[in-house]
Image (cartoon, rainbow, N blue to C red):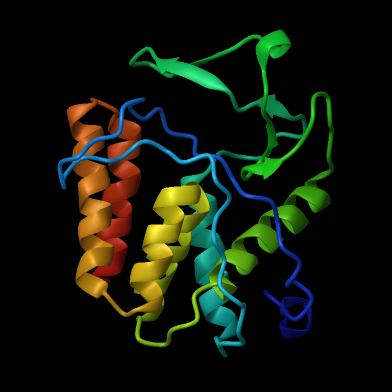
Length: 205
């Protein structure tokens, strides 16, 4: 169970998270296509206190966790270059420019962490992103979808989703997720389609 006292300590900012998806290199102009990722850091608003229940945080962390991989103690190269249809093909460690440890927290080559450290980093990263949502107009399920989306994506996409959430633009939130799902359908990436569909289902839950 999440402890309230621990939540107050999780205000330390984490570094931006690079997206794990292989997206087109040329920016798309059509509304139903996803633009190229920006290398800029996420623009985070001033974090304000929004009172939420312990059960909400349990559900949030559980939902994000289910969308990610299981625990592995060693850092890995997060610099992939193509999807073969059966999985991502990653560059050699000699050519890698970005290292990640589980749950997309930044790392370095050959770092090894304990399970307890993994949990700490994961929870800190999730809660910090949750606290960047300062509006109170969303249901718990809708808020979880927003935070999960922001957690997976970075820069342009995360900032756009955060803007929709903090301005109570619910239709834009769900349409943004649907557009991502449809993009992955065209790209024939069923794993990513499934994750976006889970968000859609959760939004209406």
